[in-house]
Every structure is written in C-alpha cells, then in structure tokens.
Image (cartoon, rainbow, N blue to C red; front, side):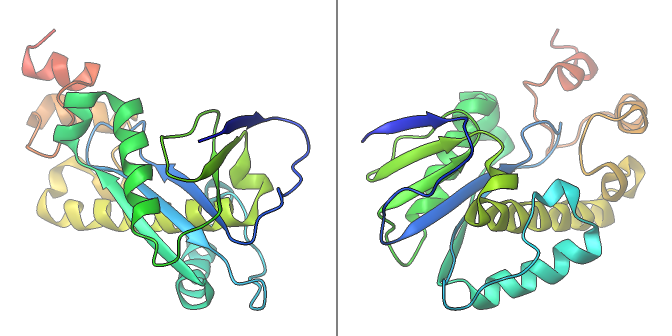
Length: 203
C-alpha cells in the first residue's frame, strides 16, 4: 500500500480510524525489540502523552495504565533475540511492528509509524519523523512499548542480577559492557551485536 515520509509539521490524514505504532529496544544488546500499536478513543482523551523517553518512570507508568484503560484497542508485538540475529535489527523491528498491527482488535484505515520507514502492511501507512513527539497515537504506543520492555528487563534482572539489567535496560553502557566481559553472554543476548560477538569470540 501507499507509503509516505512526513517531515513537515504534522497534519493528520483523512481517515476514520488511525493507529500509532512505535518500537523500543533497537539499541540494547539483550532481550526483544518491543513494539506497540494503539488506536485512541477521541471521546476519551488522555492528557500528557509525549515521547516516552522524555517522561519520568512514574509518569510513564501512570500513562500506561490510562492508555490500556481508555484506548479503543492496543496491541504489543515483539521480535526475539534469535529473530534479530537471523533477520538483522531493522527487519526484526519491521516484523515486530507488523505483529503489533495484526494484533489490534479493530483494523485501522491508516497506520502512523514513528521514524522514516514503514513495514509492509495491508492498509495505508505513513512514516512520521519524530512521531513519538508529534502524534498522540504514536506517543501512546511509545509509552506502552517502553514500559513493557523496561518491565521485562527488571524481571530479567531478578534472574541474572550480576548484569544490572534493571539499571541499564540492556543498553551498552560502560557498566553493562564491563559486566558482559566479566560474566559472559547468556541466552538472552543478541549474538549478532558487536560487543556480544567479541565476548563470544565470534569477531
């Protein structure tokens, strides 16, 4: 279907039902890339939606609860480390976005996606640069995806406390890289990512 890249001030396209899609977790060395698709209810507005990265954890969690309660429908998608290693992170992200859209209980007429490219979808889609700051539906999706992935990293931290996942959420911080060298890569790591490849002797 038709795809367009939007970089100017965003004006909503004419559509009866719009879904927003965003992802979290392209950069980490460990865990899934998580996506969300959200169709908001115009009759039930949510105040304070913004790019999830610009919100405090407390605010994100409060908005997560409000979005899941008030949205007309929402869905999560994901691609696991094995899929990321097989497909590469870009194609795995596109797959996870397709899964999020496919999981919606209402089929949208239009899907607005954060970034500069769209996955193949059975309906019209628009890529919106900085969409997580400009489009309410994408902001909502970014919040659902980030809270979901952060909670997964906190759960993984309980299984493997030596890595500090709750602190760095899997991103390649100096602390994380130090712990990775010290303890090696467990089964949740993305083996195709350079720091993990080095530790595994695959370089």
